[in-house]
Amino acid sequence: MTSRHGVFSPPAGEGVFLANQFEPPLVASKQREDGRRQSSFVPQYGTTEDRGRRGLTGIARIFKGTANITPSPWGEDPMETVTTVWHFAAMQGSTIPDDNPKRKAVFARPIEDQSLTHLGIVGDTYTILLTGQDTAGRYCLIDMLVPPDGGPPPHRHDFEEMFTLLEGELEFIFRGAKSPLRTGDTVNIPANAPHQFRNLSGRPARLLCLCSPAGQEEFFKAVGIPLADRTTPPPKLDAAAQAAFIAKAEKLASKYRTELLPP
Image (cartoon, rainbow, N blue to C red; front, side, top):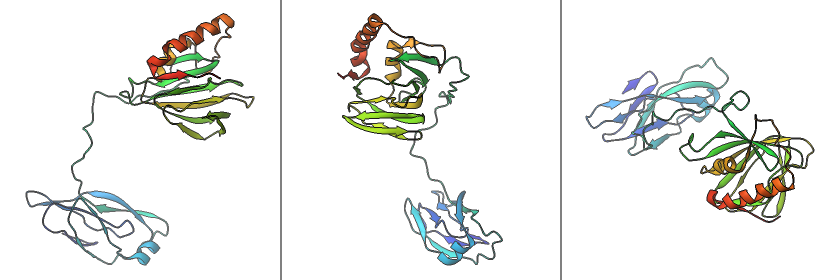
Protein backbone atom coordinates (compact mmCIF):
# COMPACT_ATOMS: atom_id res chain seq x y z
CA MET A 1 0.00 0.00 0.00
CA THR A 2 1.41 3.41 -0.99
CA SER A 3 0.62 7.01 -0.07
CA ARG A 4 2.42 10.31 -0.43
CA HIS A 5 3.81 9.71 3.06
CA GLY A 6 5.39 6.36 2.38
CA VAL A 7 4.95 2.68 1.77
CA PHE A 8 3.71 0.23 4.39
CA SER A 9 4.05 -3.47 3.63
CA PRO A 10 2.71 -5.81 6.29
CA PRO A 11 3.31 -9.50 5.89
CA ALA A 12 0.58 -11.97 5.14
CA GLY A 13 -1.56 -13.07 8.08
CA GLU A 14 -3.49 -11.29 10.78
CA GLY A 15 -1.73 -8.24 12.17
CA VAL A 16 -2.19 -4.58 13.10
CA PHE A 17 0.69 -2.10 13.13
CA LEU A 18 1.01 1.45 14.45
CA ALA A 19 3.79 3.92 13.68
CA ASN A 20 5.91 5.67 16.31
CA GLN A 21 4.13 8.75 17.68
CA PHE A 22 6.82 11.18 16.57
CA GLU A 23 6.78 10.14 12.96
CA PRO A 24 5.14 11.53 9.82
CA PRO A 25 1.97 9.80 8.68
CA LEU A 26 2.44 6.22 7.61
CA VAL A 27 -0.02 3.71 6.32
CA ALA A 28 -1.05 0.97 8.72
CA SER A 29 -3.27 -1.92 7.80
CA LYS A 30 -4.25 -5.44 8.67
CA GLN A 31 -4.63 -8.49 6.52
CA ARG A 32 -8.21 -9.72 6.69
CA GLU A 33 -9.28 -13.31 6.42
CA ASP A 34 -10.51 -12.72 2.89
CA GLY A 35 -7.03 -11.57 1.87
CA ARG A 36 -7.94 -7.87 1.58
CA ARG A 37 -6.43 -5.10 3.68
CA GLN A 38 -8.26 -2.34 5.53
CA SER A 39 -7.16 0.91 7.17
CA SER A 40 -8.47 3.65 9.46
CA PHE A 41 -7.22 6.85 11.11
CA VAL A 42 -5.69 7.32 14.59
CA PRO A 43 -4.30 10.64 15.92
CA GLN A 44 -0.60 11.45 16.05
CA TYR A 45 1.39 14.29 17.57
CA GLY A 46 4.81 15.76 17.04
CA THR A 47 6.76 18.90 16.18
CA THR A 48 8.88 19.66 13.17
CA GLU A 49 11.97 19.51 15.36
CA ASP A 50 10.93 16.21 16.92
CA ARG A 51 10.32 14.62 13.57
CA GLY A 52 13.58 15.81 12.10
CA ARG A 53 15.63 14.78 15.12
CA ARG A 54 14.08 11.44 15.85
CA GLY A 55 13.48 10.13 12.36
CA LEU A 56 11.80 6.83 12.00
CA THR A 57 12.53 5.17 15.33
CA GLY A 58 10.28 2.18 14.95
CA ILE A 59 6.79 0.92 15.26
CA ALA A 60 4.56 -0.48 17.96
CA ARG A 61 3.40 -3.94 17.13
CA ILE A 62 -0.13 -4.80 18.16
CA PHE A 63 -1.59 -8.30 18.20
CA LYS A 64 0.93 -10.26 16.07
CA GLY A 65 3.16 -9.92 13.04
CA THR A 66 5.82 -7.45 11.92
CA ALA A 67 5.93 -4.70 9.31
CA ASN A 68 8.35 -3.05 6.91
CA ILE A 69 7.91 0.72 6.74
CA THR A 70 9.53 2.94 4.13
CA PRO A 71 8.99 6.63 5.00
CA SER A 72 8.93 9.28 2.33
CA PRO A 73 10.44 12.76 2.87
CA TRP A 74 8.32 14.74 5.30
CA GLY A 75 8.94 18.14 3.77
CA GLU A 76 8.52 21.55 5.38
CA ASP A 77 5.98 22.01 8.12
CA PRO A 78 4.80 25.64 8.52
CA MET A 79 3.78 25.11 12.14
CA GLU A 80 6.44 25.52 14.83
CA THR A 81 4.25 24.29 17.66
CA VAL A 82 2.81 20.87 18.27
CA THR A 83 0.68 19.80 15.33
CA THR A 84 -1.75 16.97 14.89
CA VAL A 85 -1.42 14.52 12.03
CA TRP A 86 -3.21 11.31 11.41
CA HIS A 87 -2.03 7.76 11.04
CA PHE A 88 -3.83 4.90 9.46
CA ALA A 89 -4.43 1.95 11.76
CA ALA A 90 -6.77 -1.00 11.68
CA MET A 91 -9.03 -1.76 14.59
CA GLN A 92 -9.23 -5.28 15.91
CA GLY A 93 -12.35 -6.72 17.56
CA SER A 94 -13.12 -5.31 21.05
CA THR A 95 -12.79 -7.44 24.16
CA ILE A 96 -15.26 -5.39 26.24
CA PRO A 97 -19.01 -6.14 26.34
CA ASP A 98 -21.39 -4.51 23.91
CA ASP A 99 -23.06 -1.24 24.89
CA ASN A 100 -26.29 -1.70 26.83
CA PRO A 101 -28.78 0.75 25.30
CA LYS A 102 -31.14 0.24 28.21
CA ARG A 103 -28.75 2.09 30.51
CA LYS A 104 -28.91 5.89 30.30
CA ALA A 105 -26.51 8.66 31.29
CA VAL A 106 -27.42 10.05 34.71
CA PHE A 107 -26.83 13.74 35.44
CA ALA A 108 -26.81 14.84 39.09
CA ARG A 109 -27.32 18.57 39.63
CA PRO A 110 -27.56 19.09 43.39
CA ILE A 111 -28.44 22.77 43.23
CA GLU A 112 -31.33 22.66 40.77
CA ASP A 113 -32.53 19.05 40.85
CA GLN A 114 -35.41 18.83 43.31
CA SER A 115 -35.64 15.04 43.00
CA LEU A 116 -32.35 14.34 44.79
CA THR A 117 -32.42 12.97 48.32
CA HIS A 118 -31.00 15.21 51.06
CA LEU A 119 -30.42 13.72 54.50
CA GLY A 120 -29.29 14.83 57.92
CA ILE A 121 -26.65 12.44 59.31
CA VAL A 122 -24.79 13.10 62.62
CA GLY A 123 -25.25 16.86 62.15
CA ASP A 124 -24.03 16.85 58.52
CA THR A 125 -26.08 17.26 55.32
CA TYR A 126 -25.67 14.47 52.77
CA THR A 127 -27.04 14.65 49.23
CA ILE A 128 -27.18 11.39 47.31
CA LEU A 129 -26.00 12.15 43.80
CA LEU A 130 -25.77 8.66 42.32
CA THR A 131 -27.21 5.43 43.69
CA GLY A 132 -26.42 1.82 42.95
CA GLN A 133 -29.45 1.80 40.68
CA ASP A 134 -27.76 4.49 38.58
CA THR A 135 -24.42 2.66 38.38
CA ALA A 136 -25.47 -0.99 38.10
CA GLY A 137 -24.36 -1.42 41.69
CA ARG A 138 -20.74 -0.52 41.04
CA TYR A 139 -20.60 2.57 43.26
CA CYS A 140 -22.61 5.37 44.84
CA LEU A 141 -21.68 9.05 45.06
CA ILE A 142 -22.65 11.35 47.92
CA ASP A 143 -22.24 15.12 48.33
CA MET A 144 -21.42 15.91 51.97
CA LEU A 145 -21.73 19.29 53.65
CA VAL A 146 -19.96 19.21 57.01
CA PRO A 147 -20.41 22.16 59.39
CA PRO A 148 -17.78 23.22 61.93
CA ASP A 149 -17.27 20.47 64.51
CA GLY A 150 -19.16 18.06 62.25
CA GLY A 151 -18.20 14.63 60.99
CA PRO A 152 -19.04 11.00 61.75
CA PRO A 153 -17.78 8.97 64.73
CA PRO A 154 -15.25 6.16 64.23
CA HIS A 155 -16.50 3.37 61.98
CA ARG A 156 -15.44 0.97 59.23
CA HIS A 157 -17.00 -0.66 56.16
CA ASP A 158 -16.56 -3.77 54.10
CA PHE A 159 -16.10 -1.69 50.92
CA GLU A 160 -13.79 0.95 49.50
CA GLU A 161 -14.55 4.59 50.27
CA MET A 162 -12.97 7.61 48.58
CA PHE A 163 -13.29 11.28 49.53
CA THR A 164 -12.45 14.37 47.47
CA LEU A 165 -12.58 17.68 49.33
CA LEU A 166 -14.22 20.43 47.28
CA GLU A 167 -14.22 23.21 49.87
CA GLY A 168 -12.71 23.79 53.31
CA GLU A 169 -10.44 21.59 55.39
CA LEU A 170 -10.95 18.39 57.37
CA GLU A 171 -8.96 16.19 59.70
CA PHE A 172 -9.03 12.51 58.75
CA ILE A 173 -8.22 9.88 61.35
CA PHE A 174 -7.15 6.63 59.73
CA ARG A 175 -6.23 3.73 62.02
CA GLY A 176 -5.62 6.30 64.73
CA ALA A 177 -3.29 8.51 62.68
CA LYS A 178 -4.41 12.09 61.97
CA SER A 179 -3.92 13.71 58.54
CA PRO A 180 -5.21 16.99 57.12
CA LEU A 181 -7.38 16.97 54.01
CA ARG A 182 -7.39 20.30 52.18
CA THR A 183 -9.33 21.65 49.23
CA GLY A 184 -8.55 19.59 46.14
CA ASP A 185 -7.18 16.61 48.10
CA THR A 186 -8.43 13.04 47.70
CA VAL A 187 -8.09 10.14 50.10
CA ASN A 188 -9.06 6.50 49.61
CA ILE A 189 -10.01 4.46 52.67
CA PRO A 190 -9.39 0.72 52.21
CA ALA A 191 -12.19 -1.67 53.03
CA ASN A 192 -12.45 -2.68 56.70
CA ALA A 193 -10.05 0.02 57.97
CA PRO A 194 -11.19 2.12 60.98
CA HIS A 195 -11.56 5.81 60.15
CA GLN A 196 -13.45 9.03 60.75
CA PHE A 197 -13.18 12.70 59.82
CA ARG A 198 -13.81 15.94 61.67
CA ASN A 199 -14.19 19.57 60.68
CA LEU A 200 -11.96 21.57 62.99
CA SER A 201 -11.52 24.52 60.64
CA GLY A 202 -14.31 26.73 61.96
CA ARG A 203 -16.03 26.96 58.55
CA PRO A 204 -18.15 24.56 56.48
CA ALA A 205 -16.46 21.90 54.38
CA ARG A 206 -17.85 20.16 51.33
CA LEU A 207 -16.67 16.85 49.93
CA LEU A 208 -17.65 14.04 47.59
CA CYS A 209 -17.80 10.51 48.94
CA LEU A 210 -17.64 7.54 46.56
CA CYS A 211 -18.35 4.05 47.92
CA SER A 212 -17.62 0.97 45.85
CA PRO A 213 -19.63 -1.15 45.52
CA ALA A 214 -22.84 0.76 46.18
CA GLY A 215 -24.98 0.29 49.27
CA GLN A 216 -23.88 2.98 51.70
CA GLU A 217 -26.49 5.34 50.28
CA GLU A 218 -29.19 2.89 51.35
CA PHE A 219 -27.84 2.93 54.91
CA PHE A 220 -28.02 6.72 54.93
CA LYS A 221 -31.59 6.60 53.62
CA ALA A 222 -32.54 4.18 56.39
CA VAL A 223 -31.18 6.27 59.26
CA GLY A 224 -31.06 9.85 57.94
CA ILE A 225 -33.47 12.72 58.52
CA PRO A 226 -34.99 14.06 55.24
CA LEU A 227 -34.00 17.66 54.47
CA ALA A 228 -35.21 20.25 51.97
CA ASP A 229 -32.01 20.83 49.99
CA ARG A 230 -28.22 20.47 49.87
CA THR A 231 -27.48 23.29 52.29
CA THR A 232 -30.25 22.79 54.86
CA PRO A 233 -28.73 21.87 58.25
CA PRO A 234 -30.25 18.98 60.17
CA PRO A 235 -32.42 19.80 63.18
CA LYS A 236 -30.81 19.77 66.59
CA LEU A 237 -31.53 16.52 68.42
CA ASP A 238 -32.17 16.34 72.13
CA ALA A 239 -30.65 13.58 74.23
CA ALA A 240 -33.54 11.20 73.65
CA ALA A 241 -33.53 11.73 69.88
CA GLN A 242 -29.78 11.26 69.70
CA ALA A 243 -30.03 8.00 71.63
CA ALA A 244 -32.77 6.78 69.30
CA PHE A 245 -30.69 7.66 66.25
CA ILE A 246 -27.62 5.82 67.59
CA ALA A 247 -29.68 2.77 68.49
CA LYS A 248 -31.22 2.63 65.01
CA ALA A 249 -27.85 3.08 63.29
CA GLU A 250 -26.25 0.34 65.41
CA LYS A 251 -29.12 -2.03 64.66
CA LEU A 252 -28.95 -1.52 60.89
CA ALA A 253 -25.20 -1.10 60.41
CA SER A 254 -24.33 -4.77 59.83
CA LYS A 255 -27.06 -5.06 57.21
CA TYR A 256 -25.18 -2.44 55.19
CA ARG A 257 -21.67 -3.86 55.79
CA THR A 258 -20.81 -1.17 58.35
CA GLU A 259 -19.52 -1.36 61.90
CA LEU A 260 -19.77 1.55 64.35
CA LEU A 261 -16.75 1.74 66.64
CA PRO A 262 -16.32 3.20 70.14
CA PRO A 263 -14.80 6.70 70.37
